[in-house]
Amino acid sequence: MRIAVAELSHETNRFSSAPTDLAAFARAGIHRGPALVQALRETATPIAGFLDGAAAHGFTVVPLLAVWATPSGMVTAAALETLVGELVAGLRAAVPLDGVLLSLHGAMVSEVAADADGWILRRVRETVGPEVPIVATLDLHANISSDMVALADVLVGFDTYPHVDQRERGREAADLLVRLRRGEIRPVAALAKPPMLPTSQNMTTARDPMRAILARAHELERLPGVLTITVAGGFPPADVPEAGLSVVVTTDGDPALARRLADELAAFAWERRAGFLGGVATWEEAAAAIRSVERGPLVLVDIGDNPWTGGPGDSAELLRFLLAQGVEGAALALIADPESVAACVAAGPGATVDLRLGGKTDRLHGDPLPVRAYVRLLGDGRYVNRGPMHAGVAVDLGRTAVIVCDGVEVLVTERAETPIDLNVFRAHGIEPTERRVLALKGKGHFRAAFEPIAERVVLVEGPGITGADLSRLAFQHVRRPIWPLDPIDEPWP
Ligand SMILES: [Zn+2]
Image: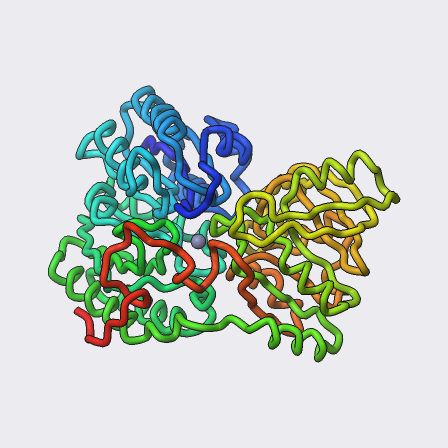
């Protein structure tokens, strides 16, 4: 058996002012051919799970392309057409194929198509024909469309947020593909989309309502005839008609069962929708939390400028807040500001510099913060995640500087990434367990590594395009009415 393997993944925030062009994908790193296997073999990603499946079932992997870029604005036509053109050419050259395993996100938006993942699947389907099975993994934040369901034979979404089961879901996808190719199963899927657009600060799967929804999904998955069930919470700032929570139930040749269970599980989620609201502290509550820290660390997270939701990562508002509180023993990751990094590099370690820190990308993430800073350390911004999430994955923040402003250590970077791993600090000479306050930008993924060391976690929402307050975003394309933008009291369906 010869199975093509590829990843083409992006979470697109339509409110971001940074278009996602080919250079953005290239900066994140494009792996081609055998280099893909080498780069991702021992990582906590779907591709590694595909490779696990190959080892277990003895199929031959045809590695084509793996690319992922940090969430940002609309994917340009040139970028998507180039990358998919390369993927299609690879598939043509690899014929005959017994199947295709794809790692997609499910919330990509492009100038080519608002439902970019559906568009990619259509191109792949047109290339390999109707008989070659296509199985794709999706992120838990996918906005699943009926095209995606129709064009793939099976969709397998992550079951965890933080997404620590990516490799397992990749393996599940490979197992289903092999069974499908052998003619052991005949997958049919139903998609249910209640009119709900939850934000993700309360979507982590260790807590309700997602804990209960996924527990129910796993119960239903054990019923005879059910192959796999995906619950995707959705990604509101993609601003597409498909944005919002989706349930996909795939059964073995039983469309009526798939339909009934998808509707039942979607109704279960709909009834619990109020649980997705809230979870964000006021700045006053955050100040009180800082005053009551015992040993620490208090993990204080600004959800308004989260790079992995498409934020520029250059808001300085969390630092402004910490300085106003006169906090001792705090470390902040991160503020993306290439100009300030260049100034620190020019001055050198041990120098004192005057910076206008952050707030430069747009007018939505606060003003630049004037600081007098001591340059403690310069770095290359490269480290490997220890996990659990994205264990083994290499991170590149560009050049970095650790500066100290009134006792607060601040990681300033050339590139924006969400700090999800303790190594973001350790690679920069900061031991996170020894700080009273760790200030981060994020939403939920930080919890995998930081919750176990945290005395307490507090979320706040600074200015920006990635938070829980959807009234800040001028939606144009989401379907209406949709909760919570519109009050809907009726049961669903
Ligand atoms: Zn996600």
